[in-house]
Picture 1 (cartoon, rainbow, N blue to C red):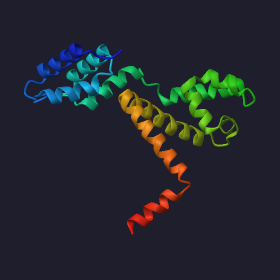
Picture 2: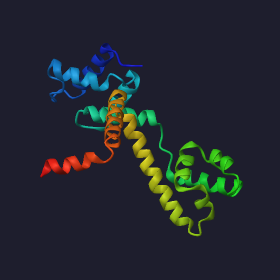
Picture 3: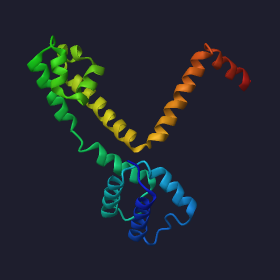
Length: 188
């Protein structure tokens, strides 16, 4: 559900009321930019993110800070990597190396995604589980950060980025490698 212009007006008024000395959204163009960048958010989520920001910050929020606050709310509470690793170890103990589907289901979808990437059998057969734990932790924290960043980017912007990336790949793949040679010649 998108935020209506009236709901956005409430958000803008709250920002101006909480930070009267700040020159936030002084003209129609700046309000249009703010609305464009926040319109895809659900009003109640955005309002709660704003309330949290006002409660904890002396300075007014930027668009990015509001979007990040909304992403934090939508992502829910962070699951600690050590809790997820504990579920992985429990699944390995209970289901063993030969019942991978049951083990992956037992550990939950987020942990299973990382375990698949690291290799379930590698974890099961590892002689140095501390190394596997460290690899899991790095992958877990990276995945959590990426998930929150993806939630913070507006849907339309994410689609445009993906379309641009896809078109760029098709263009590079379609040239059969000649693209790089042409660039080198142009720089000479």
